Image (tube, rainbow, N blue to C red; front, side, top):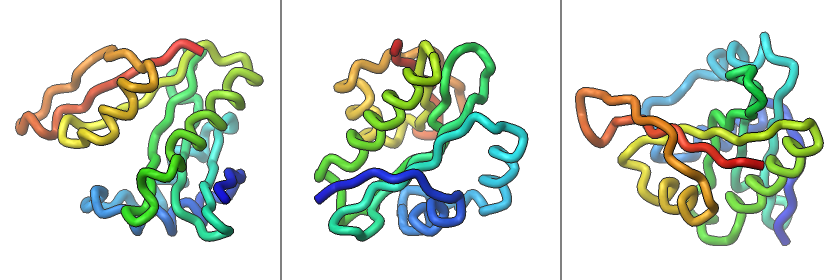
Length: 145
């Protein structure tokens, strides 16, 4: 059984440490710093049979009527079970209730599974931040709520 619950940044960070794609770990202090000055935030964890399998950290980064999904991930052995979709739907419901008009998320060119998920779920490409290596280009996507 899959459930989504609000949580602390410390609990979300424990799942973050289990995501192999995040080889250059963002330190816990960076998570705290991003959220410290922003009271409008959403931290959720996906559980499968009460075991934490995914997390999502979002906040009002741009102050433009959009909510920004900053970090999200699902542990490899739990992928394909709907956790990311369930967390995204939870965030969208929360954002709509808070009168946000858009959801923004940034990913890298190399993260093809995430790009595929976002395109399949009606996100649109907004801009590309170029980096030295093509695979590291950041892609900002947006979805109207």
